[in-house]
Image (tube, rainbow, N blue to C red; front, side, top):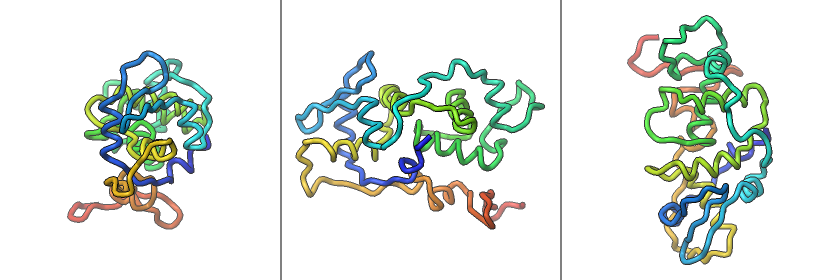
Length: 210
């Protein structure tokens, strides 16, 4: 889906400016996020996100055509699961679990436990596995508006702010992204997943029986 460069990218984070962006974010029914940062108006649209990340701004904008039961079958890679069972990330094959981590940490990030699977996250994983084109910039815009209790996409917003005509002082506080925010060997290692002999495998946690 041409998302690889975005998944592997890194950018310093201007925490204060990102917080200002969200603090001043207007409620809107259109797919454009409007805010103010350091007195300057900032508008982020799907087209701007697509240009910044170098990804397509086309594809499906909802997952209504995918049944949850079908999504579970594809993600579990089995059809004999009980529909009443509670499926967690530990039930998923290792490659699908990595895709889920990409979704919940980078594409549609959320806070809290990632053990329980949301229907939306499952359906996005299915689209990735099936090669269905998803309009990621559109989903990112809507995800920004729906996250009231935390500030997702700090790297992306910092990158966009740095590209605008905003006077960001040289001493503006910035931090490097947390390894868990990056999809690389270090980030996956924090989730006990490692690359071994050409395969991604689950790493045994010290003190636990195999």
